[in-house]
Image 1 (cartoon, one colour):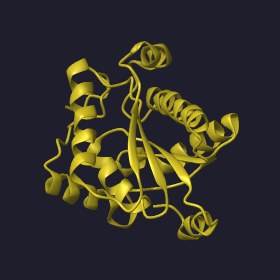
Image 2 (spheres, rainbow, N blue to C red):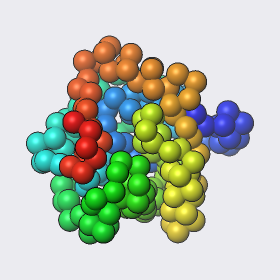
Image 3 (cartoon, rainbow, N blue to C red):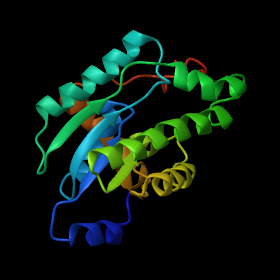
Image 4 (cartoon, rainbow, N blue to C red):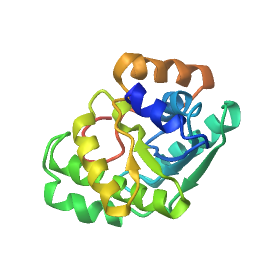
Length: 196
């Protein structure tokens, strides 16, 4: 969860700030959007070249559209996505294929996706960005924060430090997934994650 003082400082600027939200899937996004949309105008970025196979990628993208068509939010939420291309992921992950979940392959994947998120935040005129990845109980929010901070510095935007699984965030995402009938996948997306 973001620091409430950080959100208060952002919200008190007078104008509704824009945030680019890197989104791994609709279930994780459901809670994060609910939490952040009172403060931000949100552009969701679905950039996940790690997701295999293609039909899984398409299914997860469709679920985000489904969520946005059913839910209502205090501020505008729109959806951006990139073309399906696993080559970027394979290039950074190849040296670490044999590592277990949570190792250097995952770190390289996070770096790839958060750098793209920071780049797109800058291009879209969003002063802030963050990721839904920290909703997942297996995802290291401290590591994500370190990577997000470096990406933010590289592109001149601000990273919103968050551990969205805290204070019941993971559980809330499960509730919202049931409420909206969202598909909850059983693996991160990478064929090497071993979680299926």
